[in-house]
Amino acid sequence: MADTYTVKNKKQGFFGKLGNSFASIPIGIIIIILGCGIIWNNEKKAVIDRKDANELSKVAIEVTSEVVDKDNEGKAVVTSGTLNFGDAYLTDETFGISVLTPILERHVEVYQWVETSETKDDQTTYTYSKEWSEKNNESANFKQATGHENNNDGLKYKLSKPYRVTRLDVGVFSLSESFLSKLTADEELSTLEPGVGLPEGYAVSGKYITNSADLNNPAVGDTRISFTYGDYGTVTVLGKQTGSKIGAYTTAKGSSILMLKKGEKTKAELIEDKKQADSFMKWIKRLFGLILVCMGTSMLLSPLTTLIGYIPFLGKIFNGALGVVSFAVGFAISLVVMSIAWLTFNWIVGITMIVVAVGLVVLAKMYLSKGKQEEPKEEKKEENKEEN
Image (tube, rainbow, N blue to C red; front, side):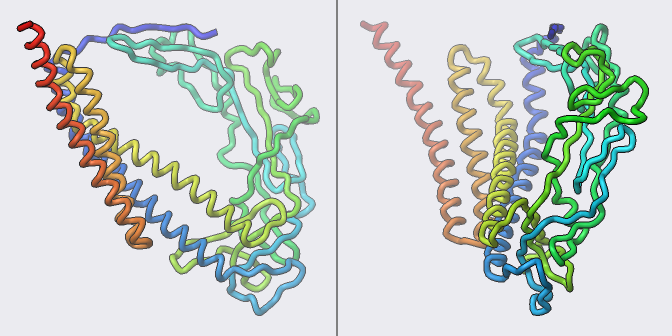
């Protein structure tokens, strides 16, 4: 059950807030530069990814995994077959777990106190709840450490990397070591056999190895350990053929490409998977960069926001307008950076982005001008009412 601890913050005066707002200007500039850098690199990579996909569509060839064709030497090839990794089991010697798989991961969680905080007006509320967590929540760093002490000794069993085999083959082809990083342990080891030589105090309970007397009612400091593995049968790989080995293929733009996917796929399906994965990451980074630029722009306007905030009634209205302006300008800056990157690849897309960016700045300016014009009108209406 969660409990809370509230701290009354020292209320900051006008000059203190104003000083902090001016101090945030250089920070805002740094954040804008950082956001623009992320957007630039992301758009540059998006352009390269698109060129790489187009190149693979043209040069990659589908081959059988039953025989090595010397005519394909040095070419980008796509082939399917059973993933062979030997008959040896991967073994976690600490807990006596052995699985016939190319990859095995150990997951360690400790039941511990977790602190979250929320600041509203002049007070901060700290909330403490007990959760299973793989992170080390240091209770010594809690605002209210008394009564929320953690014992995270169980985290010593965390592994820095999963267990992996040392060799992979598909048919007559051997795969380079780089393909090992493409393996994923996404299957849960749902039942565990009673291990031999478990650490003192640990026992098997369903899919967990634990030192808890009751996993349904754990105590702080209890540890539970589970395992996931990779279940691989038929796979499809893409890479460069060198003799009977498949490794990374280097594109004309210098990208190192190698792919391993479960199931039997065509070249077109494999390249489409790559496009979708690239697109997902592109939008995540693009959104992150945009948020940083808008945040930095808002910090540049913070002194004005602080001053206007003290104007009765009108403060919230104008600050809302400044928020819209911050977003519009930040979005415009982001679009300009994107457009410069895209101009190197598709000038139509680049010019379109620049036009939209300029339009946003113009709209923001019109929005502010409209607000200034409406203010005297409101005052005039009040005067007419008084005269009547």
